[in-house]
Image 1 (tube, helix red, strand yellow):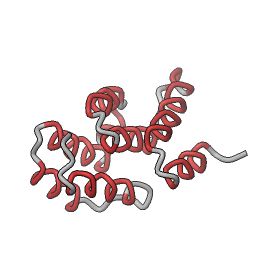
Image 2 (cartoon, one colour):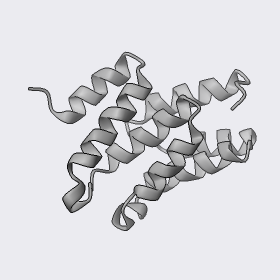
Image 3 (spheres, rainbow, N blue to C red):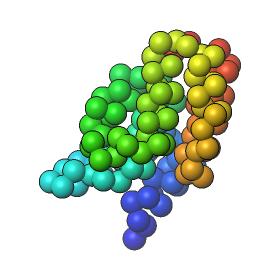
Image 4 (tube, one colour):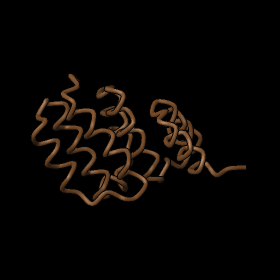
Length: 123
């Protein structure tokens, strides 16, 4: 059987961002007893929701991130990117999205997200 992360990676590779977000949410819910401490589970959910133009869902996801993970540089960077999109500050969004050294897992997602808002997609 594939590991949860491999499964999510292959869904992402197919460009099925909402499906990836749902898969991550499921992992998060299944580990509810001892709060999910997998940073990537929240990161992928947040970015996938942003790509799908579901900024509300991305914000709710951030609210569920455990305190211990909120110290993570990458999750905080995602939160800042989200805040810029929320405020329709696309210049700030691009500055923040390109300033951070994203992990190899998130880099392709951030490129898709940046590409979307570059095309002038109205969020």
